[in-house]
Image (cartoon, rainbow, N blue to C red; front, side):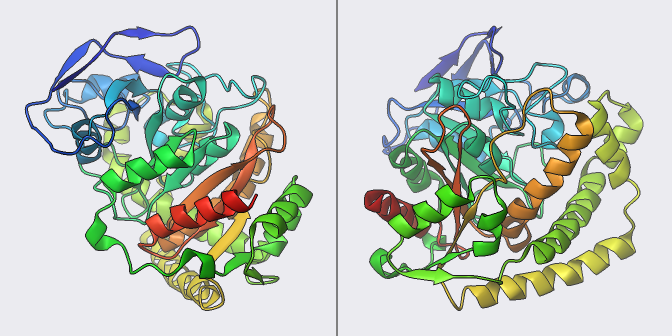
Length: 401
């Protein structure tokens, strides 16, 4: 079994197609993804194909991989056909979807807006139709955000459910392998391949799921009325979390996440950055420089705050089974948004994305048909190892729509 890909960068850059015949010498009885096209974020190693991690200096200073990521391997052996490797923000350290070296993938739904990162290329490849599945990673929101900005489905699974071996890491305590699709059925097919059945917790009847609405967070997003309307229409067993997820709480949680993530990022890449002195985009360079300043004491204090936040979220799950909340504060920012405003928006964005990250929980983004020219949607956050259950609950909600 083999998958081939050609080499070019399209006029609308999103995927680096590589002239490489993949050696598939293993045989598998699983053919569940036969005929499904796959685009892979260029953080995943594929044997014999260089990994750029979105940065030419990384490409120049690292050898061509000799092994393939287990996640990629599993999808190929289930019958998926590789389209190519997709553009990523540099070392995956951005949520914008821009890349000064390889180009910014084109948001087809909203050409004047950012595509969202760092799995931008994978999202755009799916939205454009070149691939049915966009494999990516999510550390601080890199599946959920581009899925939202491009009107797609995207799953960040429970931390640790899928192997992150043989890929470029950002912050291992938060890194997850995720994927983006145009429909829930395809997303579920990938879940059946990648999510180990033995790890899944005992499911409860989907119809009995109590879905908690993060009311304060919804009220602060730019499409609050549409979000509330969707919740009221879709959800039969409602539970209003009126103050359980306040903006003040999440500002603190987001700060905790950034400290822990930044500390790990420097432990992971600091030595290479110091030695290689790579060229980064200014905003990414600034964040790496900040990572270098985080002390071990700050990291330890943040660890304590993380435990307190996890306890709080665990308490909320004593009231409901799933949390319903906005994925992003609104539609994607405009491409020409000044850098200072993007930095401010990033903080608001991470107030929402940090919940699943700090707690290692699965989160599924679901698009809402509000404005086809500025996609947005909502998310469901589930309890650990209830990933497949989360997909079934999403299916039930969409049937109620």
